[in-house]
Image (tube, rainbow, N blue to C red; front, top):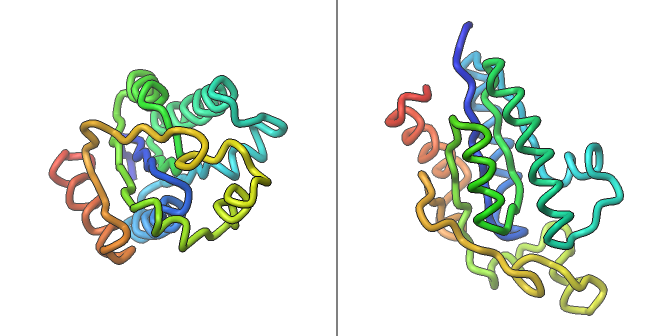
Length: 175
């Protein structure tokens, strides 16, 4: 199947549901016969940004690496799903500029719900003072001003979120 690639960029607080949604979305695209790749922020950090810290500058370099890989894949017909906190609007704007076919998905979830979910124990560590740079607590998160899609994960199922994304992608003639 020859197709045009594009990038779906999921951004949101830690624990908002980015990874869970990206995995469900990957399964959807595979079931439809698309070439698809997930670029999860934690996985890419381990493999391409090992040893990088969490200063704004280091986060920016990490986001540029993810953007570069996403651009390469998408221009070769792959649907790329990026799940990356990417806390700064300027990082996401640069990714949009570099990639072109870019769909920003704001994975919105109240901080208290993210803290309650805490799938990786990051909030627990941050609240105990073991982590000093967690996005949403000690470091800022700049919500998107005009994302193509906003998902309210505290009141939607994963399937509903995937359906919202797919519906918007069809409306945008990506699929």
